[in-house]
Length: 168
Image 1 (tube, rainbow, N blue to C red):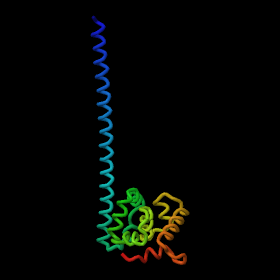
Image 2 (tube, helix red, strand yellow):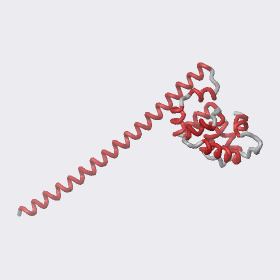
Image 3 (spheres, rainbow, N blue to C red):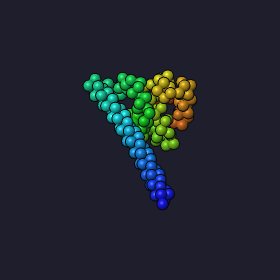
Image 4 (cartoon, rainbow, N blue to C red):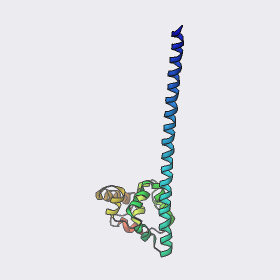
């Protein structure tokens, strides 16, 4: 008679343990997910605050867009480049229509090539582009060459001058 009660007790205990285990696992994953979203929201807020402060400085000091981006620290540029969409969005605020003109030249241009063109437009050197995008300077030369071919720029023209000449 004790064995059926013992068996029932063990099965209830094991079932309860499994339920508690999965409940704790669910809560743990939920907490991690919430932390991740909070961290992302905080990062976005920090980036927005940095950009807003630089925008206000530029507005007060009447900086040109190139000077504005030169005044941003490398850490801030890297943060902007990590979220490519935000970099392009902020760039388009200073140079409205630039990306549309680039895309009009070649609709198959990639997002990374648009970012490269934007960095060239901002006056970054090959060395700076390499530093901010974590690639070798030689890779930047190669990317510029490929972009030059995609945009149909003649071999005797400089890609930097061509991109600077694109009206906004």
